Length: 279
Image (cartoon, rainbow, N blue to C red):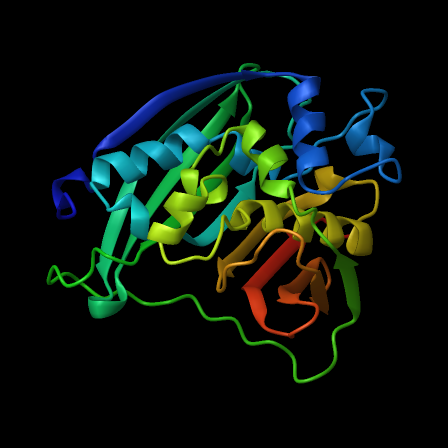
């Protein structure tokens, strides 16, 4: 099994998905929202958590994985960036087009497959651009370009804020209903074959928890002010383990963030960037 490098640049899409308020609320519940955030969990005056944008393009992820011919047992989410062009409506039809933009060779560590897509709402509005990478642990050594890693310099001071959360021990069972059905997060045998003791959290689920923490800390009740969110997934997390989102305000409308395991202090998500419309 080898990566199909001819897939680079090949168009993926159009991928069409209809959604409504129930999908928006299901996503919010799946990333930890509850009664204390009615603007995300009640259809009255409903708003959309910005990272719902990634949950709407799971079919694009699968297409990138399939067309690149990566080994699924070695696949982990590497990086994610979303640039928002307009606020996300609570219902409609989404059309996504994109492609695999590159495959980087990390040698014995594996390979990185990068894809980019643009999603447009049925009303004709361009909503968001997703840039994602899959880290494929078993597909390196094909002789390709190594590629540069995105680096983020954090301030040499304590964070300006910290938000604690504890995803449920069953969190992946709920999150997968948003569309991410990868067996790594539900099948114990698959997880063991991939080198884990049991199914792990979806990185994008933890990403959603972090996004909620950023919204609450920086732009409470106004998710439509989000302009960009980006991060790198650094370490697997098991369901039920506590997390802490650390936030540094760095400029007007800008912040850096990371998610750590609240007990061990180890980074789970790092290199986080968040940009929003300032007041």
